[in-house]
Image (cartoon, rainbow, N blue to C red; front, side):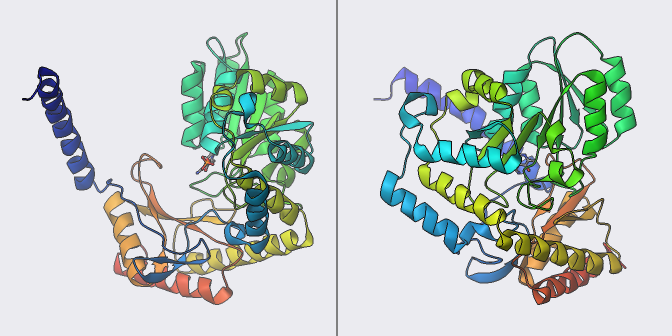
Length: 407
Ligand code: PMP
């Protein structure tokens, strides 16, 4: 016999599932439906999807470290010694030797007093921002900042003031208009994830000093890549000592997983005591920390310098070929090279046709980017060869012409 509870639940499920089905159908109609692609190989510059070998042009594994032998070996050794899981949050019993060793190494790498690990970049931004600001405070955030910064600011209940992208004049006016007594947090991506341009950190430092704000830089895409020693966008802009919170991720150029924030000791101590995503989440697995430690050592070595140089050379080559073909690459100044396409269906058709040619570049649509600015977000890797990139640029040009994106 069917109980009342299960009948009620079934009706409820019917209504909600019906709404969900309609929403999914609408997403499909607008070209905004997302589905997963299964990668069958390791994350090299070539990957395999559905039995097809593809040149990968949309990974954040910029230096090719995700499958570097040194990282793999470090992770395996850590598993042998410490096992797989950390078993608890850091403040309970999950705080292990490798967490602290990695934090010391990150602090040394970034030139700060201390550092703190988070379980991902998303979890870092949604944990750090609400710990530092709340009701009565203001977050000034670049309009193109990553979604996790926006979510962190919304979660904090501070007033969120979004300034036009990289527009220092507009930011200054907004700072003057909102010059109240509470805390002010100025936050920016170091490298903008969908446009590949770099924040004007020198000007932002001047503004933060003028208005007494804290400056936080999310360097998810600059860490390991920018600056003479790969320390990121602050090193590149010569303002390392003026950034109050250096946030970065370990899952992109550093080839592992997780995130960090580096800064003054008191700030780190404060986050340990107040940041909810730090306090209430199981610590990173030790092997992930061991791989990140090996990655930072590598980035700091001569091999790191060679990989960064290779990445820079590859990027200029690729950008030059695409510009010559007439593509609009937005403001790309880094290994992130967007090809502006326009509407979502066109971007997704571009991706599909490139897959047929043996190249994987993901089309990017709202809500990741504003409507009408859909793009192919190409990312260059140090491990691409010149022939790989020349072949890719030629295929992108062929498809771009067929689709009328370029003449
Ligand atoms: N910040 C920026 C600028 C990012 O691009 C990303 C990832 N795309 C994140 C934060 C989130 O990092 P994670 O993937 O480690 O959660």
